[in-house]
Image 1 (cartoon, rainbow, N blue to C red):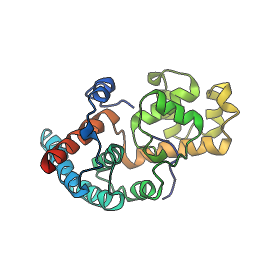
Image 2: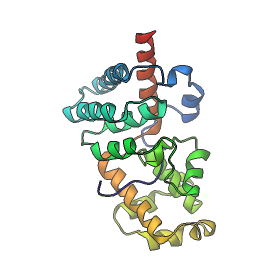
Image 3: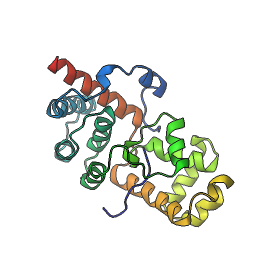
Image 4: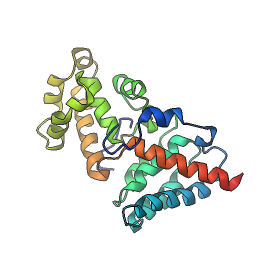
Length: 224
């Protein structure tokens, strides 16, 4: 994997508010007692339904990502299925990021405390410390700079065009974090953001949450 990802995983194409989605969580949202192969089938069905609403079908790349992800991860939590759903949106191969997720311990946290706080305060999943959602990028930049998430666009553009690197980012973040994060880590943040954008573009946590939840609910219905 060219640039490893050390951040966890908020809002571009969200069609439902995060608050409503989270409040609607049921015991079916765990994949613990559902066979992964069943969830794999229902996820393909839900994603295909979403694609057909735009006059499209699942691509070979998407189907390959789903198959590879379920083979390597064998999900037993909702967060696992959520991560796989995010990887399944992309038509590009997601093998590197899937392998990285599969190799990590479930409770492993490769994120600095400020970044973990950014996720926790915004009810975002940790996904084993891997950056996967657009919302995470906004959350991290907002947390570090003290700005509102919708005010971080210029910073994000600067990072993506490489006009903002570790030194420039350090000048923008709040004083308490300047002493906590080394230049090397700040550069890693920049590289992770670029990698995430290049691999899958903007992936919405709210949308993936909705898809993953429906897939698991269907799988539970099939096995009950």
